[in-house]
Length: 225
Image 1: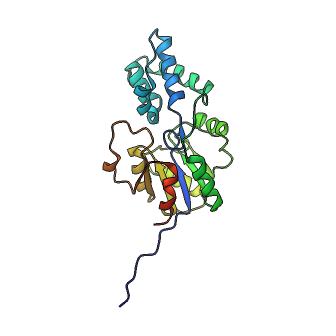
Image 2 (image 1 turned 90 degrees about the vertical axis):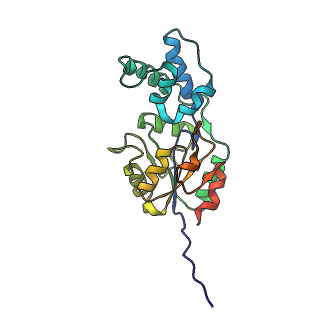
Image 3 (image 1 turned 135 degrees about the vertical axis):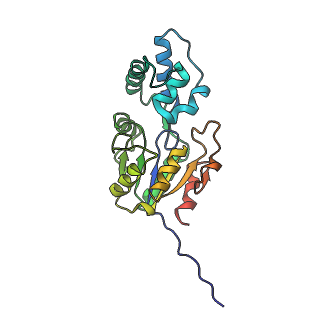
């Protein structure tokens, strides 16, 4: 009696979120938020309080640091102070998460293209990746303003797959936010959650991802399913 099994799904490209997944940017983003506080005569907040908001950029960080939303009259001015400071201090403390450099090496050794799909504006994505030394190694750098829509819309994911020269269904995405899972699945991609990222008090088990990993190298066994 013979049995048949489904053919293995082999990943042909790996895509990463940037903040909280590929690189630990929280300290530099928190410093920008605290710079805004300093401009208003307020003491700095601890990194532990600001870190969970790092994946949400200026909106999330200014909500915690200054208790303002985009609807607030002073939000635009505060955001410009935040962004200008961050642009000038984009890699003071930022570095790859432990194990990410090794993971990228493995992908490249296997001939698998990899890239970044982030909601971070291109104004910051490119110089940060250049400072980290990975801009030229990436098959694609898709930022929050590259396409008409940002994550959780699938458009950036589909654009990244096209740039990498593979079908969306052949991509594996790694992110640390619910919108990452939503965007990947909407594009027909598998998605893993980086539990080492900026999850805050969110439980990624409720996100319906295809797996959760504690360190970047744990992605490797998921390349074939």
